[in-house]
Length: 292
Image 1 (tube, one colour):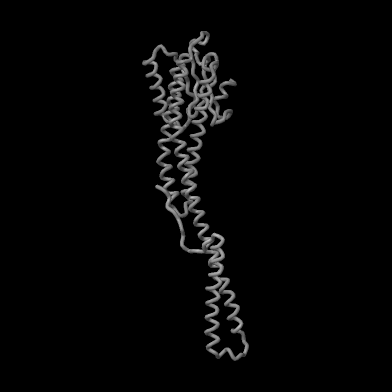
Image 2: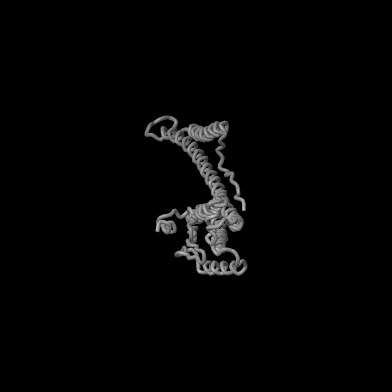
């Protein structure tokens, strides 16, 4: 009963696969299949809802084909080879289905100025790809550990467990599936790398836009500061005071010219100062295009 618990999702980590060897059984717990392999039969326990009937039919067909092609091969090897082959095929199919969705999400995310819904969609596909990568990495890591464990490889011979059986056949089965999983892992890693690079490029674009808005904000603040000074100066003449300058056109012209010169001169001084510090107060946005 304690061994059966290792096939229950409530007692095991979904991302950590396991192969448990007993005298007359092999307990297989790899996403998306949980099964018990005996000397002459195997039982799939409530396959994952993500595994459709086609994959289960392929599993049965594969095992029957392997039995016809190699009748002398122990049944447990044939069943294990069929299970691992279906697992590899399932992950490859999931990666193939995910790739177009990722491409569409990345295109929408990179070309939209305000990618709100696109960001949520990209986060979902990234989470799905990361989960697949963790699950498949765990299975590959488990199989590679088995290849270095002579005792575990010997325990897989249920038919001739009492005899000293060679492990070459078991190693061949495991190595084949490790290579297949490595190819799928490379495809998933490529998808994750593409997502990461697109996010970095979009972050750079947003940072450039934010810096541009800060520069515009600084320029406008300098202009408004100059206007406030001229407003104070002109407000002094607008008070209810009697003076001889209120009817003199020269004072009006001089005041208007000095205020305009003050605004322009103060902005030029600020512009030159910031430029000496490496900051150009220009409203011309220097962007870049995202690569296709």
